[in-house]
Amino acid sequence: MLGSRGALCAGRLRAAGQAWLWGPLGRPPALARGAGAPRRGDRQPRGWPEPRGRPLGLSAAAVVNSAPRPLQPYLRLMRLDKPIGTWLLYLPCTWSIGLAAEPGCFPDWYMLSLFGAGAVLMRGAGCTINDMWDQEYDKKVTRTANRPVAAGNISTFQSFVFLGGQLTLALGVLLCLNYYSIALGAASLLLVVTYPLMKRITYWPQLALGLTFNWGALLGWSAVKGSCDPSVCLPLYFSGVMWTLMYDTIYAHQDKRDDALIGLKSTALLLGDNTKQWLSGFGVAMLGALGLVGVNSSQAAPYYAALLAMGAHLAHQVYTLDIHRPEDCWEKFTSNRTIGLMLFLGIVLGNLWKEKKTDNTKKSTESSIEN
Image (tube, rainbow, N blue to C red; front, top):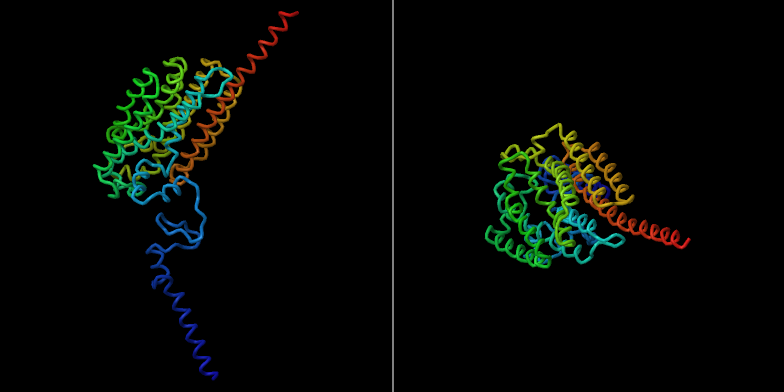
């Protein structure tokens, strides 16, 4: 009896020892880790099944993942799962619309909604064009190899048809504006089509992106006012371009090794270890141009308070940036949405403040007349 129990215990110990020795999947632990088994504390790689029972999130990526499966590659093609790019395209439009509002009034909500829809469509169209141009390059870069066109989930012809649909809808949005704005918006199409090619021919593709992404700084004002005021719109546009040079240079540092291997150019490769000095210069130029915008549009104290907050945020961003850590570059890149929202809030509050000052002036004038 005791002998049989001893044999049973010994057998169980041998089985436990073999399970520990060979690890999960029937391999020794080292081989199992080499084959992709996660260690304790490791982040799970993309595509790793989510643990059962995990609550469904409300993030953009979760919404795309819950869409019908045939639709998901198209939603990823237009980057609906990564809305930061849409924000960065949309925010200069909101600045311009806010600055064009009458003193004491909120920005035109109809225009904000219209430009929001246009930002989603045009950002999607730009990403589609980019992926069609760059599909062979994307296959060679780790971060972009799973994009729908590069991965073969969508053909070039399907992408072209999808692009036509997005541009048609964007044209419908544009036709809701005045004639001046329609012509101005149509003029940006050349930039939208050509900026993805710039990384092949210049180390300044981020400048081409800035010229494209900040067109809304001109278009928002003209949509409200009927034409552009150069004293406000041009420095606002310039400030947006400087801003894009900042955040997209940070973004480009994620791919600099792959870009160097496959022959693509970027400001990240051009500036190298001098990146922080250049980013500081871009930030100073951005804030200086926004200061000029404030003077030329008679902005009030909340606007300049927002500029101070933006300056502190940009300084912290540059000071703490680690250009050799892709995770940190992505974090700093996405934090620029906060900077854009700061400025929009400062514009709105500054506009309401102007009405407050006007009311006080009227009351003091009336009281002096009565006396």
